[in-house]
Length: 242
Image (cartoon, rainbow, N blue to C red; front, side):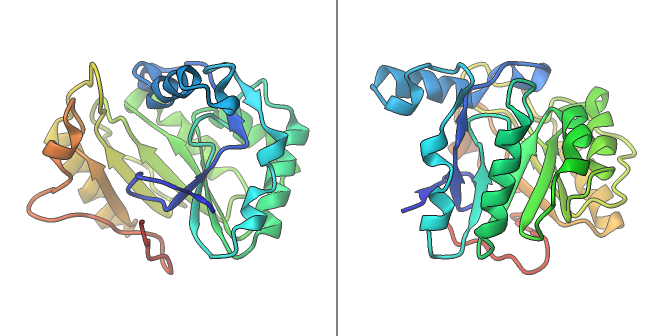
């Protein structure tokens, strides 16, 4: 069985890689780090190293065993383009995604420079969506790196959104997710930041997905923006969450 996910914009997760290191302000209160330490304390074998970068060859071909087509977030507990992940491992993951053609895979990175560097070596499958995280105006350069890759579907995860994003260049971008930070120490999300991005997406014809307001009690804060939910996805995808 696939690992069903509570993340609003996907259905399942696949983690052939766990652990990471922090590189920008969005990493400060990393949910994956908190979860990894919790799983380590519970004795979960894949997290024996806590949040130290760890490759899991035994999990590499899991999606091939999942026969029901689904949307799968790859490495929700890590970053595939971390500098310490061997290129051979990256290419092996892309090969599995190509062979598991009945699924749709979502890959997300903050290491946009390495993503662009490795892109020419990747045979980009049609069923792989590639995204970059952008938390404030200082990191919009990641979008340019993404745009120069061979990914067939390119998306933005503007989460945790820590400041306004003015005049986004959405050319060649197929989807945008926005969300506030959640959990202990969560930094506030200004509604004006969200609506400005939403309006830019509407003008550019880019599907817009509002994930959450966040905060310490994210469920209570909810995900209603101006009286409705925004669950837009790239054409042809309708999420079925367990």
